[in-house]
Image (cartoon, rainbow, N blue to C red; front, side, top):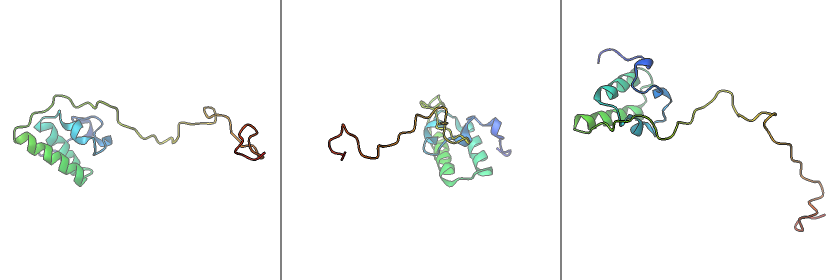
Length: 112
């Protein structure tokens, strides 16, 4: 492949957000052409050594007779990061809890 694929041309739509730890299972369903596309894209953009090594290893396996698994979708969704921070807001948080100043009368281990 001489041309570097664009993000929207990749065989995995969420490729840029896949953690490298789950990448081997996510690419197991891709054929040699799909892996080559990802490898070309990775080298042109992030060029992350661990990711390149994972893709090269899978490409070597396919060239040596490994078969694609037939699926590229994860069994569990990836954790996504939001830029908004915590989903807790004053409207969804519980009431404030202030400990009593002299202890709890129903708890004998605390002073009264």
